[in-house]
Length: 241
Image 1 (cartoon, helix red, strand yellow):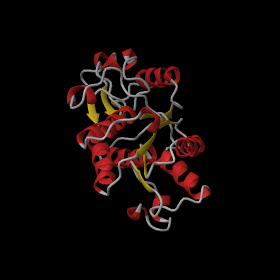
Image 2 (image 1 turned 60 degrees about the horizontal axis):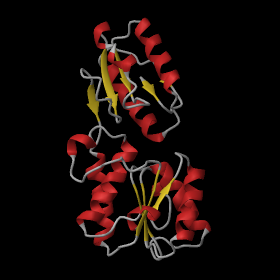
Image 3 (image 1 turned 90 degrees about the vertical axis):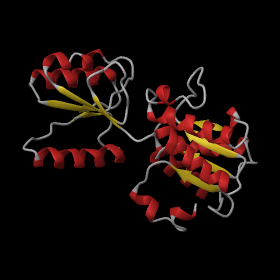
Image 4 (image 1 turned 180 degrees about the horizontal axis):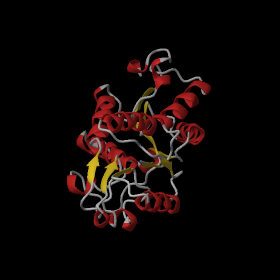
């Protein structure tokens, strides 16, 4: 199993499930964490292939620079892509949720509550030349980009104009999301809701709301993709935000 961050909650939970399923089938799992570095990913995959593993589960760093994964088929090694696509790895299985549709559902929930000015905290840029309702292209996007597309699709579907200034771009870290959320709300005081594209960013955004003395959900609605244990401990519970 080759993943970008062993400390990430999503990958940690996935690793637990994969390890359990493999063990029940008579296999064991070797783990490599690449820290999101493509060079480290290549090295890990080549090392595992050299050890003649039966299969590799990988969340690829890049959707395009995947020659090291494409070679595995010729070596008789099965490949499963976890959460992140790699279109050129033709023989691989791909396990993921529909990030565009799920994101659209999340933003539609805010729209149904009456929100028109909805900010988003995301690490992604809007894909160049993207056209709405393009499912084939959506399958080739990284999760963060696909979730941003879902946000845009929800706004367009409701007749709400997309505003680039409502997009707070953040590195994938709680501290970065905290600062991005503060900037977003400072520059756009008219916002009544914020959508975060994953749980790490949601934690930073929620902390920013607390420090700014903005009550959630009284003053600001907050919705985040994914879930973490901390989300069940806040008051009011997250189903109220």
